[in-house]
Picture 1 (cartoon, helix red, strand yellow):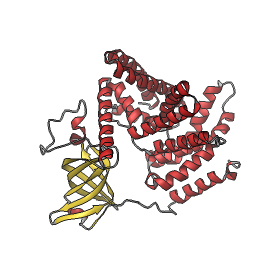
Picture 2: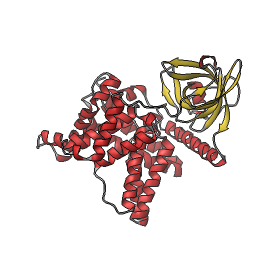
Picture 3: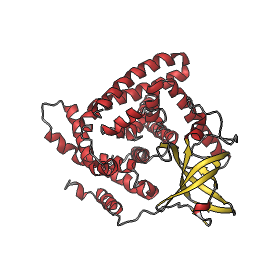
Picture 4: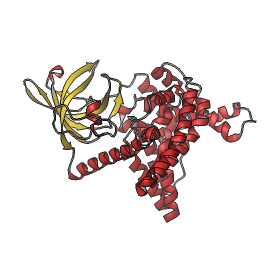
Length: 417
């Protein structure tokens, strides 16, 4: 630790973290919702979705999105508006196109579309204020199209349709498809609630959160294939392109953006034949850039857990390695050491978010993580095979279901349920 305090990049990021999380430095909202209309009187808004919809338990059961508002309507007239607010869509609206979600119609009978990043809507809403935060609960609405110029509209629509088709394929795989969908796209509509809660309660919630593990797996496959076909430079470029595609498809979560930043820096480092940066320096530099580009991420759980766990592994991993008995096989000792370091560094965040610690995650990750890696590898190749040879979907689904059964039983065991 003393050695790390001589690292100027690490010290800079540490000071920045202390300023933000102590409350000394205030995190300013760069796009607050601003409108001359009285917020409580707003009955309709127009704008576009700026994030993937995420299912929540708020207002019964709904999907939360960030929504960029352009116009606000009251009983007295129309007002220009700007900025973003949290908008909660009822499940029947968001899931109207999802497989296995049977809704006969949108309540107004009006035109409706996919609720995805870039989709424009005119929404009938009810304003809810929680402290200084303004939220809107959607009661009904109309799909207006896609936001942006002609090219941006095509790209947004293509992405939304790709995500929908992927959900349809994963739905055909049953419970195993629900887990794979969560691991590859961040959508948890089809993940069993008992299993999702068990991942959290067993200290393995980082596995379900899109992170560098998923990005590294996807980029590693692309890099291997690219280098085999065309050499190092083009192989590295193919890897970066694959990583960028994954981030575009899955959505820009804090942990994915952190992993993408690191991949981009390492690619530029390799391209210009520079010395490879030390791990903690790279992580600290990513933290500083991330805070500058997306300050809204700083207080999000995924941001705090992602950086804290990696920093803990890099700072305390070697120390824990010395503490574990030498008769434990080396690779297992490394895994236990990294898990222990991550648990230690994320303990303050876990207590704040969940109200308790889950130390069993140290041992649980030793058994579950390798199986999840295998599950991801088989799932990726299974998706490709099913697209090329659709009739093989049934046997591949059976294999994935068997592996899912083993993962779910282990996770439920370590959650003490």
